[in-house]
Length: 254
Image (cartoon, rainbow, N blue to C red; front, side):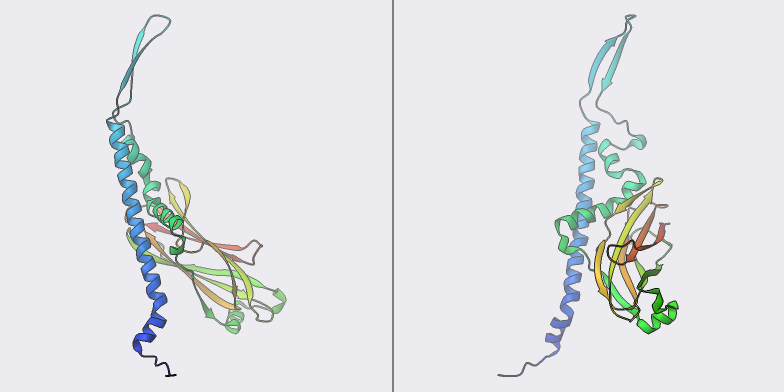
């Protein structure tokens, strides 16, 4: 049997395949989001057209005194700002524009759950370094807590940013521990919040080594996001089946 020779092409296939596969999946997801948003916009325009040119109906009524009144319904456009009914339903003010991209993402991921981007977890400090950093003592038992979320405080529409969260996993003997991680994303507009689909596993159980870890999620400020709206993220970490600790951060569109 001849020995297997690992030349450059073979190594590229071996080590480059996962990255290339992820890029391919991300491209498909991006294309699907654009298509979904285009479909939603078209549907809104059609509904608006039908609303504007709907057939009107006139009725007459009379009261006890014999006064006659004429009422017309249908046709025309009674929405504030000149929006058609369909367009108003699709836009929904600032909140509608702030959430449209992520609503389209939700539809795409429901149809293709295998396109959900994988979590990006890495160890940033080993056990001894994390113990020294946190002033941890074995008598504290298992400690699982978030340390900080790092991300911009503001951004422009049609830009990308990363939510980077550092958290500690500390055990008395330095052993691994079962950890539950949850990630959430909200749009903040029109005086309210709406939870969105986050492009990462929303909740997962991991077995992690003791030390400090970092979780990275890539997020988008949609090109149609109105100035003044904000996006709030939450990162929750703790032991499975127990109440975790939550950190939150907000980025504003300016």
